[in-house]
Length: 126
Image 1 (tube, rainbow, N blue to C red):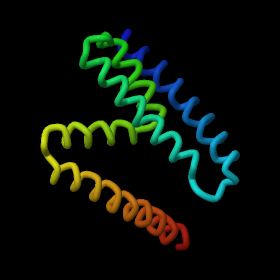
Image 2 (image 1 turned 180 degrees about the vertical axis):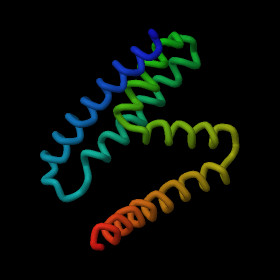
Image 3 (image 1 turned 90 degrees about the horizontal axis):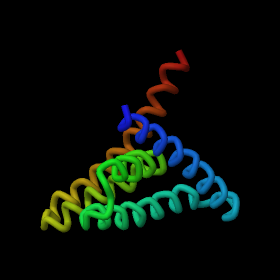
Image 4 (image 1 turned 180 degrees about the horizontal axis):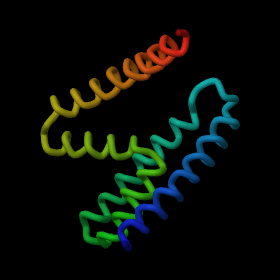
């Protein structure tokens, strides 16, 4: 039950933090380029790197890891998990797998957003 609470509390806090930072950054930039999302993704990537280093050094308990990495950063941005996974692949010498993950995730992700958008529009036009 504690683990679920840690996930819920961290995820909720991360979601609120993402909304606040993204909105403030987007407004401050004039709203042309998606600076809010960029700020969240880059900030989350920095945070996950720092927290992972602390966890590997034994400075974070498993519950703190669950709350901070899975909950808070999971609610803040899943991009941080994506970058951590690619970092791990690169650190393990898996350059081709890391490149494939980046390429497939981005190209297929953009394609699937387009496909979903067009598919729903086709269905709703009937």
